[in-house]
Length: 255
View 1 (cartoon, rainbow, N blue to C red):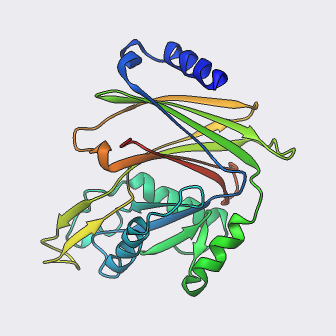
View 2 (cartoon, rainbow, N blue to C red):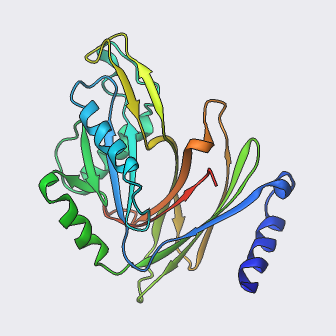
View 3 (cartoon, helix red, strand yellow):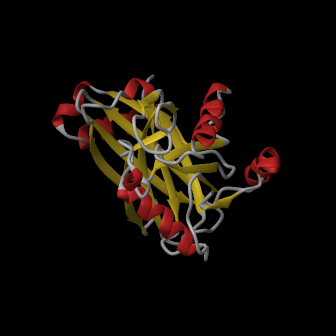
């Protein structure tokens, strides 16, 4: 307990002065490897709503974030057919294509799921595949610390190798939000009200972690249309030229 209190004092002193009235929150990844589950989706894609609902059902099941961390990345390459997805970002298009290229896959599509960085279609084996990942020991530990303020989040990510693994990794941060919706008035989903959870509002990185333990310190500006009471922050890591996501950690921002 003393070491944690000492860490919080150091963290508060090392962050900007406006952080002194914020709340310190912290999360640490488990000893097992966590399932990092990505969905690439679009409001302009008629086959995407069922995949969006699948992610929402995961939220309703109160999943353990020491086991499974889902995120929904809304892509932009369907915007041209008549409906612009307001949650879309070309950065997510680029991540999807880069992940496919690193895994030697020829195509990207929507809706596309990825489990720990690789294309995933074994829906009938979902529970079994999760258990298989959870049985793997983690190669890295992630510690995620934040100080929340009215207009910003000060973030500190500490990466520590385990079991002799000390190869460089790339660190990413994602701010996500639940309970978002859109009334679609054009495109393939015209006339539908679409509901979304785990929506990535902003992706940061990659940040290089080479000398361990490595610390990444970042100040995230809170955008006016974000509702952090319905969201959270995720940190995840992968090797720079490899598709596999090696570990992830989640921190709810509504505590």
